[in-house]
Image (cartoon, rainbow, N blue to C red):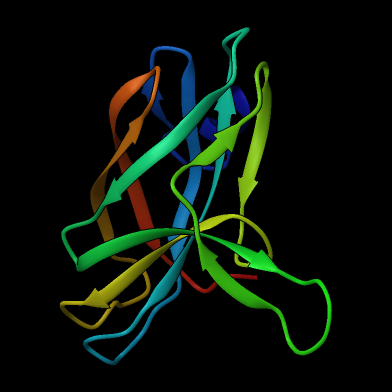
Length: 136
């Protein structure tokens, strides 16, 4: 928690769940699909899972994983939930399991902040601050 405060990020808390560094890249186009970057810290002794994610600037969200196997380029595949390991940290990035925010309702400008909502199977719902910033 101290690490997040030093970086100026305010984590979202839901009992045993902390959501850190939630961000999306800027986009000028309305109707874009943008990946959500974030880290979920599960301090509970039991595993949990992310079931839903809602943001005011997107019409829908989808939990996806990236299949890298076999022939051809990697492809995204929808999944029911994103598993979160017990007593550990799970990074959600476009290279693996993550949330896609679909059909943006407005341009997203660097520096903007939104409050979104995440629903977890065991930890319940939590409000998550999401920042629009260039993703490294």
